[in-house]
Image (cartoon, rainbow, N blue to C red; front, side):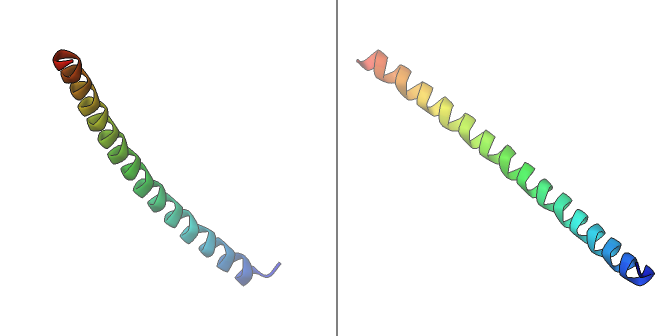
Length: 56
Protein backbone atom coordinates (compact mmCIF):
# COMPACT_ATOMS: atom_id res chain seq x y z
CA UNK A 1 0.00 0.00 0.00
CA UNK A 2 0.97 3.58 -0.50
CA UNK A 3 2.48 5.26 2.60
CA UNK A 4 0.46 8.44 1.95
CA UNK A 5 -2.77 6.42 1.83
CA UNK A 6 -1.93 4.78 5.15
CA UNK A 7 -1.23 8.15 6.77
CA UNK A 8 -4.54 9.54 5.51
CA UNK A 9 -6.43 6.51 6.79
CA UNK A 10 -4.73 6.76 10.16
CA UNK A 11 -5.58 10.46 10.43
CA UNK A 12 -9.20 9.72 9.55
CA UNK A 13 -9.45 6.96 12.13
CA UNK A 14 -7.95 9.20 14.81
CA UNK A 15 -10.49 11.94 14.03
CA UNK A 16 -13.33 9.41 14.16
CA UNK A 17 -12.01 8.09 17.47
CA UNK A 18 -11.93 11.58 19.01
CA UNK A 19 -15.44 12.27 17.70
CA UNK A 20 -16.63 8.97 19.18
CA UNK A 21 -15.12 9.80 22.56
CA UNK A 22 -16.81 13.20 22.55
CA UNK A 23 -20.15 11.60 21.64
CA UNK A 24 -19.76 9.10 24.47
CA UNK A 25 -19.16 11.95 26.93
CA UNK A 26 -22.30 13.68 25.71
CA UNK A 27 -24.35 10.50 25.99
CA UNK A 28 -22.98 9.75 29.47
CA UNK A 29 -24.00 13.24 30.55
CA UNK A 30 -27.47 12.81 29.08
CA UNK A 31 -27.86 9.43 30.79
CA UNK A 32 -26.84 10.90 34.15
CA UNK A 33 -29.34 13.74 33.75
CA UNK A 34 -32.10 11.33 32.77
CA UNK A 35 -31.35 9.16 35.81
CA UNK A 36 -31.60 12.23 38.07
CA UNK A 37 -34.91 13.17 36.45
CA UNK A 38 -36.25 9.64 36.85
CA UNK A 39 -35.24 9.64 40.51
CA UNK A 40 -37.06 12.95 41.12
CA UNK A 41 -40.18 11.64 39.35
CA UNK A 42 -40.10 8.41 41.35
CA UNK A 43 -39.83 10.43 44.56
CA UNK A 44 -42.77 12.62 43.56
CA UNK A 45 -44.85 9.53 42.74
CA UNK A 46 -44.05 8.03 46.11
CA UNK A 47 -45.01 11.20 47.96
CA UNK A 48 -48.29 11.54 46.07
CA UNK A 49 -49.18 7.87 46.60
CA UNK A 50 -48.52 8.20 50.34
CA UNK A 51 -50.57 11.38 50.50
CA UNK A 52 -53.45 9.71 48.66
CA UNK A 53 -53.35 6.75 51.08
CA UNK A 54 -53.45 9.13 54.06
CA UNK A 55 -56.37 11.08 52.60
CA UNK A 56 -57.94 7.90 51.26
